[in-house]
Image (cartoon, rainbow, N blue to C red; front, side, top):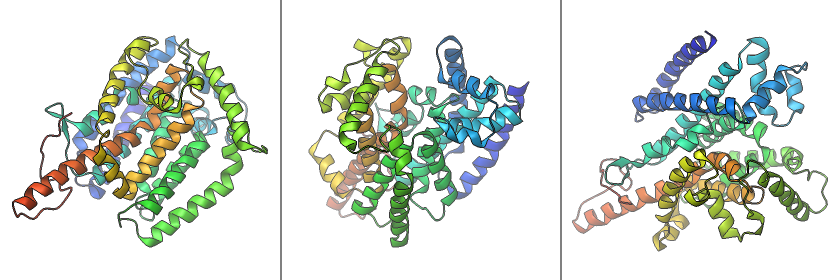
Length: 408
């Protein structure tokens, strides 16, 4: 009965949310967002069944808090305190069951997809068709692995929502200050070191982006706010690897990474010796494995299909024109590229388990997809511009009027 009532409430909240979206973003498809919600619900059921019959962080988060006698603010002292902080009032005050909490946190994951959709559609007006007839944006928004790992009670749903909310808001920080603050809270409370990488990516985009979308005041605000955040949160960020009192951060991080890598490689029987890999192979493993030859289980086989798609997409940027593009790319592209590379780089030093890699990379892959998508849109618009210029026609680059196919 509780599930039915909560589901009805979420539908009502969604309707209010949709109305707000239409006012601010009349170009988006609410019909598509509703399909994403229903699709995401299927993965909520799938993950719940998975969690019942397998070891799951969701059960850990529920049981720890269920038998805890501490107060709401006491959760701040706990590891991954953001999950417990959000869970506490619903469990302790409203009496949510495990199933209701799973549904609620899955809804947070869905909100992440909404902001991902807004982030993509706001910045890229071109429609890219792949494999002859499929809309690339829709493919990216319905990737199974992304939905599975953001459909449960735990870190995945919250941090995905936080990251997507943050990057959507950071483009217009004054107008979207609440989304910016909420995104910051969710990222920092779950993975403070990821917040560090996100801020570095934002500042990189601000300094080196070619566009004029951000006003001078917004640029100063973002840079000063980012530097202040890093200064105030430095101990919390370093404490993730027990480096807050380190005298040699580089050496101590290396020791921590090796220890963490060995620990993770022993879990789930799907360890890989990433510590001995050269850096390019570390990146390849994090981004594209498991593939069919090393899928650890049935879930790994499904992930292999998705990883094959990732690989096909990444092959599209292996051309000379991409490097010319990235040099002149706008702030949002350079921000996304930097966040993607920095976070991937850090993860490759501590990930040695394919099962955990499948889960962890879900929070950063959309930044890589965004760069690829923008590049394909740029190439499409550029070809159209050159063709029309040759025929003495005026053109607006990156217009959404033309819908040619970009083949993969």
